[in-house]
Amino acid sequence: MTVPLGGIPLADHAAVYAALDDAGFTDVWSSEVAGADAFTPLALAAAWSPRLRLGTAITPVFTRGPGLLAMSAAALAEAAPGRFALGVGASSPVLVRDWNAIAFDEPFKRTRDVLRFLRAALRGETVDGAFDTFAVRRFTLERPPSVPPPVVLAALRPGMLRLAAAEADGVILNWLAAEDVPTALAEVGERRPGFEVAARIFVCPTEDAAYARALGRRMITGYLTVPAYAAFHRWLGREDTLGPMWAAWAAADRRGASAAVPDEVVDALVLHGSPEQCAAAVRRYADNGVDVPVLAVLPTPEITEGGAAAWMDLLPRLGPGEGGLR
Image 1 (cartoon, rainbow, N blue to C red):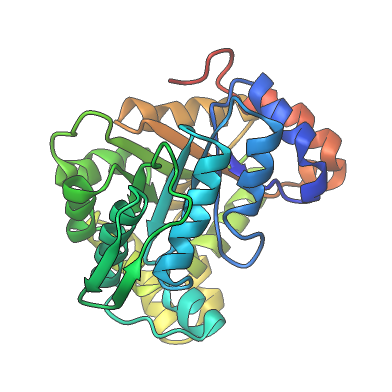
Image 2 (cartoon, rainbow, N blue to C red):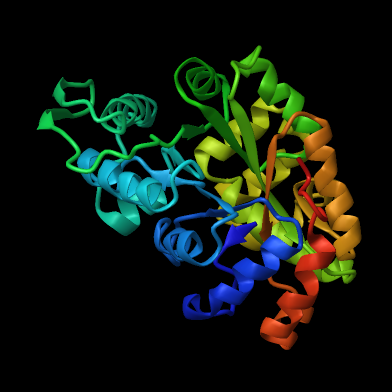
């Protein structure tokens, strides 16, 4: 499950983590956009729910210096030895450049360089030298974790997918349908032992299909017009179905762009229906090769009106049951 849950203060998440554990969820994964940072919700989970595995999906490689990113990861790995995975990725120009005033230059090389730096630094090695996109002088963690966390890489298209396969401990997929998973994993090839595939899956657990599709269209228009995601979905073969959206967006017709997203695309990328129907749809990702399906639950009228009580009723219905999906 993606944490923190919307509408529940972080201070009240002890009950959330306990409910997730009871419902059979094995992992909690954070994101980092403009809400909570990636590490604080997981630090709380480390203290409050010692059975849950923790992961970031993702921490951007641009918005922290390499040393600070290594220190944050090492601290969480020390707090939760053997149950934390560090997910990193390029993020987007909006988050990096527009919101954090950092140049979004050479994202592939920066991601590769930070991945290589982190793998060495988290093993307790001294890193001293120049990478293509930055240089580090004699950095050594003062508290290297006894169990270095796996470093997993967010990847969309072939270049980053192949980098993940070659140098990371796993890959994180995002904004794809269950039927798209084999296309992405074909670029990964045969997996090394221990290599995991995680996927963030958007779930809108309501039987109000009109509401879910309206929200899904807004999200798809906002995300899949970003150049990296647009290129990803062209690569997946959605030029014909999403072409009208991209054309309207390029003409500054935001309303027309949203209206141009077909129902079948919304239904494939944003799962909706009863919680049980959503859980069944998530299992299709597992059937297609995803090891760690990470639900990202979107706001629904039921959750908004019911607050924390609605969440506590919902989680067991979305959950994989005793022992977890895996």
